[in-house]
Length: 443
Image (cartoon, rainbow, N blue to C red; front, top):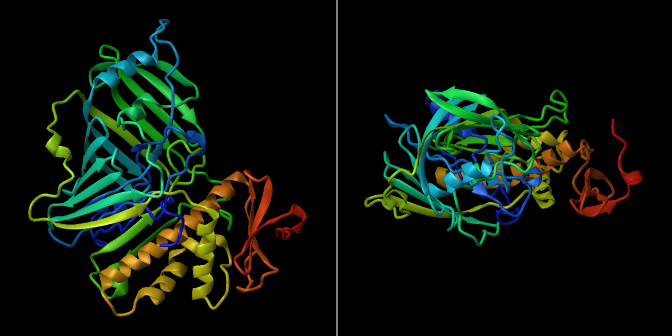
């Protein structure tokens, strides 16, 4: 793997699922983000996260699914607003949440591709268990930066260790996302009855995201949370469109089982303010606060009789070197020619044949698929870096017709806020600071 260690991308390993299975299984390929990991030192408005769902399964009567999502949460102080003229503070709600060291809840995902629900359990500090609709189980130990996927139908366990992002030293409180909703204004908007329970309703809105929380008026505990994430639709019909980097490969592409596939999707983290993602709504509901849970439910030891595979995944953020890598791969596989438009780096009809040509060597299909997906990680991370610059309005591309090695030609450029200068990638794949008047004229 080449991109920076643990940049949000390498962190994603193969997502496996039956390619001809039913709609619910296909949805897993495109879960765009789940709020699972807090980053206490970085503002949500600037935080990016790349995640990769990992789902393995054979075409058996019951499909096996396992999902890994790496997402960065934000640091938030409290909910403001008043309730019925009183000064009931959000802190009163937080106190109740702190007292609940465990919670059971359901999480429903609604995407452009369909809807599914997972069952979840949290135990402090930093333990989570997610049970998927088709029998797969994921156990997270956030303090250790580890996840274990269990696939009961095939008795297989996959253990993943995060690398590339510094882990916080403090105890991981998995209920933090409810206690830290946003530093920006949150409004009390009234009361509403939810399943026979009267609730105070709060709404928080930031760019590309709206969060609504229903709080039981009697217990001061949340009974429902709805998070709506909206895509950035800038230039949706042009070559400069904002896209969500995503690609699926099948083991059949490498001469193997047509019922096995891998998908990588890279999207913005909650609160990033970028909108680099498809529309998704995540609803938390059916809370049971303070439930009695046995710690064995969160054991990271695979069950007896399971085969075990261990691997590391990269949780670092996309950087310019990822883009250089993607452009290098493309030019290598296309006789030195760079993409006509930069979004071609994620265009399945163009990228997949290149990946198959490079990695299909009549060897072990699973190993070849894994190697190809590692390459996809790096390429799509570079494409995500591009989308980030697009939404900032500082991206330009002039690579059409340029051949690799033409060191005087600028392929693409963006404004670097850290240095206050424009940066450009040249035809020999070097990166240099350039003056604005050196940039190619845009069509």
